[in-house]
Length: 141
Image 1 (spheres, rainbow, N blue to C red):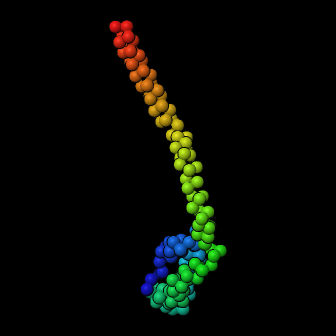
Image 2 (cartoon, rainbow, N blue to C red):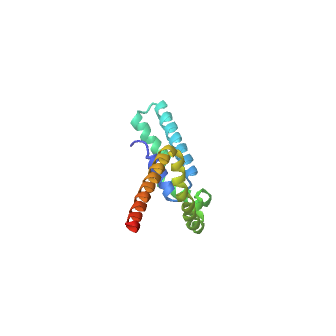
């Protein structure tokens, strides 16, 4: 047996509604604890493989750990604790963020947008002047 899949543990915790900060902290602490257990077993004279197996057994079943964390309401993200509020706030956040995205992109690419805008204005003026000439030639001709 090798090291437990802590990345999968973190994604499973997030999937069960545990807040990111708690899932990240707990995953890091479990990884550190596992490494300490492996080091302790190696210092006792076990091989690396045997030390990993023993450390994984001492760490226990991660599914039970996930269920215990899931049962604690204070560890859940606010969107899982208050789903009706999240249903309202997430779309409102998108309404604010979506119009702001082009503005932010425009600020970071101001030079390109200025050249493009100038080209569009000049093309519009040229087209309008050509249409004016055609209108005048029809009206006067």
